[in-house]
Image 1 (cartoon, helix red, strand yellow):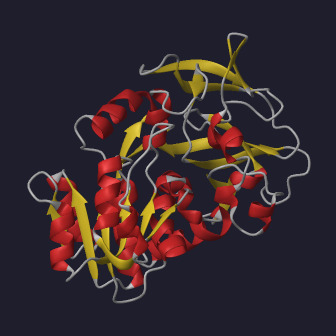
Image 2 (tube, rainbow, N blue to C red):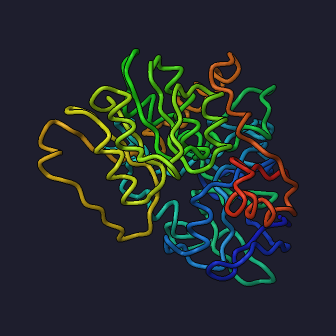
Length: 365
């Protein structure tokens, strides 16, 4: 199968668009004609080699499209089905069997190693192998080989070009609230960093009935959108000590906090902004080996810190729930999205990273 793909050839480089060849799906695999793919911060951290996905590679892990062909043994999707592509997991380990697919022991090799577990790759360019299988999909291409496990079937009338970001970033933000922290109605939460993950958390916190939702960021435009989407208070970290402000406005500390920034000092502030018995979730992907410090005596007073991957979600369950919430007007994530043609991918990167004008860039194939 001939396809067109965006390839990262070297650390920190731009995406290079080129023709490639993609294999037919093997047993348990699905060939998807990609309609659109969201750009996630993780694509850019891999570009910069914070995670050791080998290069050259086709990235992209928020794909959506239509099933073109299925391999032997695939039963849950068929050609013509609309699907959202999410992260890959083995489906057979104790974590997966208990419904904790995001904590599958094979998560790293399946999603970041650029190869199938047998060492093969489905993509070649001019006869040379290109690393793929990124998050089990490598959807920065017009066609993608995915596994049955990470294909989520959606309704025939679903707005497929919009839905790709549900596969990772938006799922992560919303799921951290709805699946992991589970704040009680009337509770308070502080969300540090309101890009696409943090703003998704803001919307989910509002849907959960949180009474005080505090958004912290350095980008005034994003803080303004956070207020529109449900934040009751916003803090510009350029001018205000967020930790002190949160403790003051909540009368001693927030019930919950969430850090999306992957900055150790910000994570420390998030934990310290909660009251005794408060709980903090860390979801930002830092460079491997990054460490942070906490005050042990502060933690002794019942505070909790937990890591959350992919919103602790089972994609086949959670993504349809988010679609239903969006359709009902309870989760308007379309307000985060800016569309680009596929050949504008490097412009989308610049608007995401340098200018901050794109919160969730979506590439239309």
